[in-house]
Image (cartoon, rainbow, N blue to C red; front, top):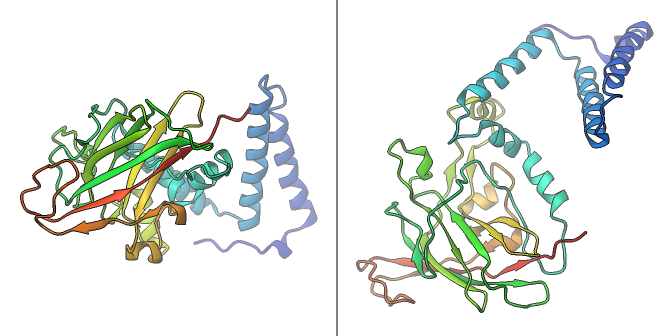
Length: 302
């Protein structure tokens, strides 16, 4: 690795050369017709060059960064988004969510979207099963969707998706299965319920460049146990969130994408074999769990 000079060793002449380049690149965006695009590109340029100059990036390090981004592009496909993972592990996803989903009264908090959402998941009725044959402990999930004034939201669309007990989403398998995901709509009283699986911890995909980066810096790729929700309804702010499992040790160890919020940690109560299920479903004399997640949607603020 090339040894770079410290900031104190840089001459005034060198500083001027570097600053002139920054100014020139920033000015190159002056003619952008979209003022927001201009703002973004010029700010990005300043911050990027500030980073390069602060750490005195070497050419070898620059080449390593290009190789990393190239590898991220090569491993990305319609089922895996390495750049979303990269954003997640840097906390950029959560920061963007925090800025764009500001607290409003008692509205449910948002968290990361993740890389494994699939549009057009199958529809199930209230009380239906999203598992689709995936392995795991059956779990009854129920709740209501209301607005911040406490009024029920009928017809809200709820997308739900999760990994199986082995830590894999359906799209990570090669057999085109659809499992662990579905959508349903709330009833006239804003109620919903479905069968899923009790969430378990799992690592984000770590066989690619993001995983290698985490290994290099001594960070775990493991996510805390969670179940994904995306909730939409007319006139209300869309919500992307998870619920997490109370007592999961990974919450204390740390979620690899910084998605845990205290308000989203829910009690998943294990039911002994033979315990009657809420809808009379036969779970083959095995244990099952149940949880409640009441969702509060914020209004769309102008």
